[in-house]
Length: 178
Image 1 (tube, helix red, strand yellow):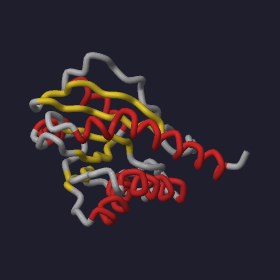
Image 2 (cartoon, one colour; image 1 turned 180 degrees about the vertical axis):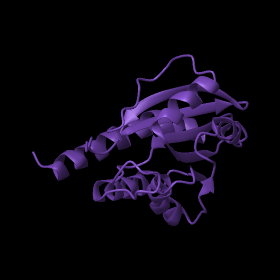
Image 3 (cartoon, rainbow, N blue to C red; image 1 turned 90 degrees about the vertical axis):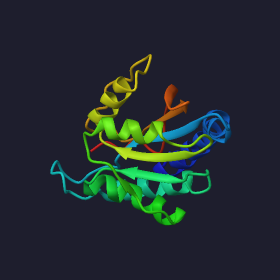
Image 4 (cartoon, helix red, strand yellow; image 1 turned 45 degrees about the horizontal axis):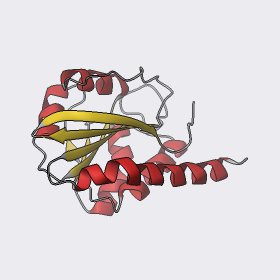
């Protein structure tokens, strides 16, 4: 099997899962939905290293996946890898990326809780920050540790009355590892 065939099948499966789970949640009048992902594959360990060619493919995949999903806000940290991961989607939607500082899970949680009912956002963040954010939001269950070489996890967070009501974990795109 080629990577393109697998990536094609992954997109098809993900589309079905989003239709079954996430998009109905985003369309409800009494909830807001956040699609939370880690930044795409990075070229090195420095904070300002760009994303790789595989990372650029993953960023384009995010734009294709969420380009027509009713997303009204795209959030990223100040670091280049999150900015580059979020840029294709923001461009497609014609919105400016909202910057919330890396590690500021309090501000991020407040931004999620303040989203209007029926709205949806995509947030591109960092691996350790995702785990801390879920804990801060009072998630009833934990996620498995996101490894440094893991870029394909997609969390769907649902907020009702400004509080985390639950989340689901999916995978998207090919599981490229450096």
